[in-house]
Image 1 (cartoon, rainbow, N blue to C red):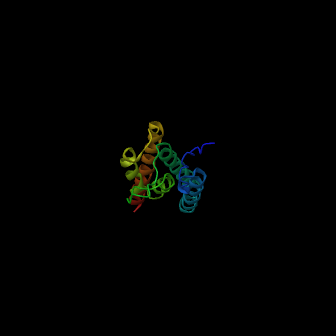
Image 2 (cartoon, one colour; image 1 turned 90 degrees about the vertical axis):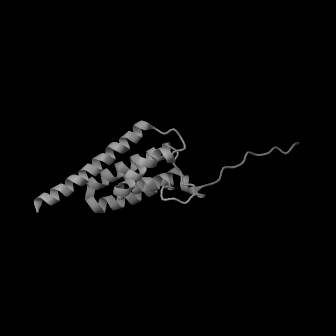
Image 3 (cartoon, one colour; image 1 turned 135 degrees about the horizontal axis):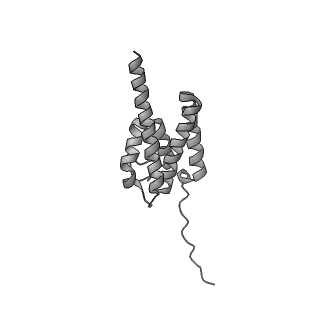
Length: 135
């Protein structure tokens, strides 16, 4: 009997396990969004983070352990950074998504990310305008 070579087992990289990424996303975005803005913040934060996470996951954006860069983060990290640090995270994701993706992705989902992100930015600017006009 010949020794048949077994196919090489893919590396067990826990950072790309879907359920762990989803649990982290829901915990961190949900926790901060709820305490910062209440129920509305929770809904908007989870929707924005969830859309970003789904888009990054489908587009094949993964953390490469051999590269060091601000943009070299997992889909979960994008899903947390974009709604929580949207002033920096949203433009960074929107501008660099096509450079980071390794799969074709879904342009409609990316369009939703851009639409929700634009809504959040406009809401933020409107709240600043409202605060300034009261004084």
